[in-house]
Image (spheres, protein in one colour):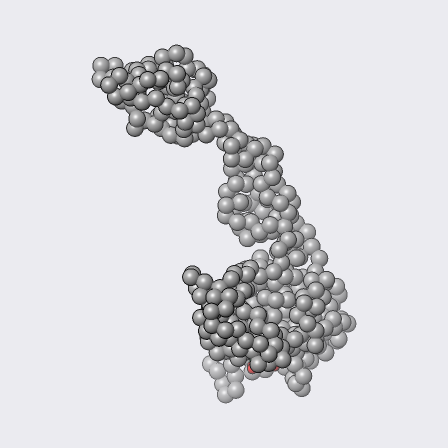
Length: 402
Ligand code: AMP
Ligand code: MG
């Protein structure tokens, strides 16, 4: 049995960058940048007002007080979007709005709320206190300067970065291409949810779960019809999935039973096996194979085993194919609310809940067919073989909703 680390290394070794495409910013969220991007303009791109108010020269307001206000003649209005043609001279001010360019000679903006009009001539504006230099002015380049780095290669695009890209003049961005992922569920007991269950049958659930996981990793999932347990059917389904996708994920049929046909099917397709079985629970039976230069990940059929092995071994591959720089699950530290025990001889990824206060609890039954705890869980705790953690211990939680 391979260690998880070695299995991850071997899985990643099969993955290569699939190239890039340009997408509009509106479609870029969560995608991985394929190039470094610099600001086309500075932000702000010109000195402008942070307030509705008046551009002034501070020296005209020295000594102003409620008893003896300074009075300046308003010589113009600059709405946002206009270019100032006038400059301020001694004893004058100019009306501005948030985002209006600062006229020449102005060295502060006074908030509208701090001024009043001369009742006899509303072009005369009264200021009842002095103002500090450069108050309420947003300076060119104070946020980011032209040609500064906005984002580096391999980063997952967040909402904030998308906003910064747009503001610095980018309408689209080059990102890693989404890998096409074929999903093949094997098992003669599996039926579609549109059918009535007959004796011995179960509803197939791995393809829906994997669709969700693959989509979150930016992959394009292609689910194929359920495959009964025969070598011919398994081989034919996998052949089609290889022809139409960049990666194939099968579920079920990778144990040692008489009805486990995924490994022989890889052989039938002229492919090779890289490894089989890894020392983790849940998820021991797991196959990595290659057919025509494409990888197939044979996930175990048990839903929890399929999810855990996908997150640990397949997700990093899909991210690497898109050029991501960070391939692994996000970790958070939490404090255990209860004891966790692993009496087995394989490390156990235990389904847990991590709440807003950092409290970690078991998410429920931990056997690999149990889906209700999977639905509750938002994290996994990696517990080494024959070990335990006590209530109150600090633990690392791998976040699964990623
Ligand atoms: P296998 O890996 O084929 O031996 O399957 C292990 C267990 O997982 C069996 O109880 C199967 O019925 C169940 N199983 C396999 N594939 C799926 C699937 N796609 N959806 C739900 N359960 C499955
Ligand atoms: Mg099976």
